[in-house]
Length: 351
Image (cartoon, rainbow, N blue to C red; front, side, top):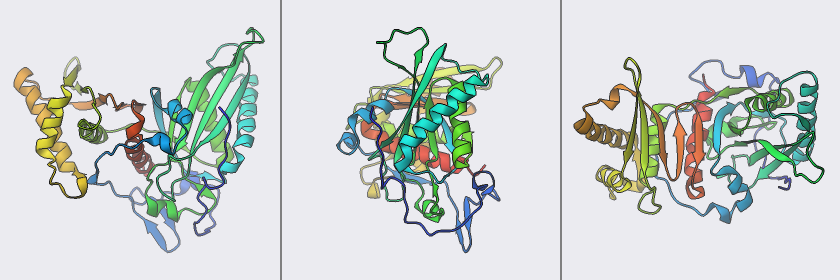
């Protein structure tokens, strides 16, 4: 995978407002305000409606090799505050610095759960084309490779960790309010040993004065995904709709509920009719879908799923879990998923 830089990947058309480098730790003064600058206030609201998922051939604007890195893997989600003085044109330099940092930390006794390694090679790559607006910064993919001490000279290095930072359809008012020396890539997805994830986060925090936090999802987000993905069935066979609940019984009861995709679509079509204006989905329609599924389940098993917590939703298009793990199953609807997750990351930074 070749390293790429983008001179246009870092939005620069923002008013310059000087702030201290403690931004990542102290920019939020109260839970109701997201970003404050002199004479300007941005309030981020939880939307009650959103556009229906639309298919797009993403490989027409994004390198297919880059898309292949994002799909099929399971990713653990985090959020990250804006990066101070991050530049997409410096990715080669960042690769060298992070590699040296990991080696130095390991030499100081930090445990790295990948075996006996001779060294680490880090690659930063700009994934151009995922950004949907002028305010979105281009996605950055990070890959760490390592070669065991006793490997043969001809053996290729092994990929031991992957991660990426992204912003897709981020709140435009918030993004425009950022000073020009901050870049917002609020969604951080990782796959690999937790020890390496911790080191990568530590390096970013030192290099760009940012903070990371765990991004757990909530049942409302999972409900949205169930509705958005079900609505895709006529144009892209979702194959199944699998839902999992955890019920607060003694002992706790886990319920797995698999719905025939055509049945799920017919229920959704009876709720969200073709006459719906501008093809937007309202939260009340999402709630009606889930209520319909829960009512059907109760008729057969006399169990109130509404008394529990929805913990996972999955289709052939992807899966998402309450604990902040996701899998992208189909690249044609990746924008819909990343838009929702970017929103979740930005909202989480309030707390």
